[in-house]
Image (cartoon, rainbow, N blue to C red; front, side):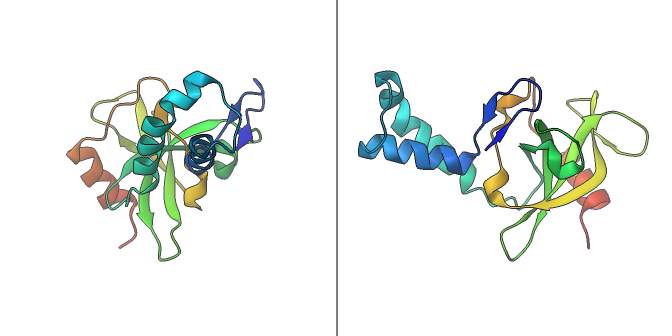
Amino acid sequence: MFIHGKTKKKYYSVREKINYYKKVIAGKQQAPPTTKRKAKARLRTLQRIDSQTYAEPTFIVTNDKHFGNGIDKPRLGVVIDTDSRGRLLVASVNHRTSKAVILDKQPFRQVDERKKWIDKSEVYETKYIDSVKSLTRYDKAKIIDILRKK
């Protein structure tokens, strides 16, 4: 979990949400009736996100502090690679400049060369960033070719 540096909004990771919904379903956590009704469906969605293999490049959201920003805020990133310890190599996605991969479906966004290893517990849902489209197979090929270690 992190708290946005300006708006003070709380952002919970996928694993934190899974733990919360498991407690709601088990009756160990107080929750409104609407949350109790949606808990099982929401839990399935979150578990699907958590169990992703990241074998090919995938969009995720993580804390921008991992990329050197001074305040906590959500940052869209692309998982480039994984290691044996379960960490993810994530490159941040920014507005377009010159030496970076420009995305096919989102020409106003790019994947640059800033990369950091993060733990899977630091993955958030992409719903926090507006108008995120999926990566095309050409985007994935470019990202693998340009940014992944060989």
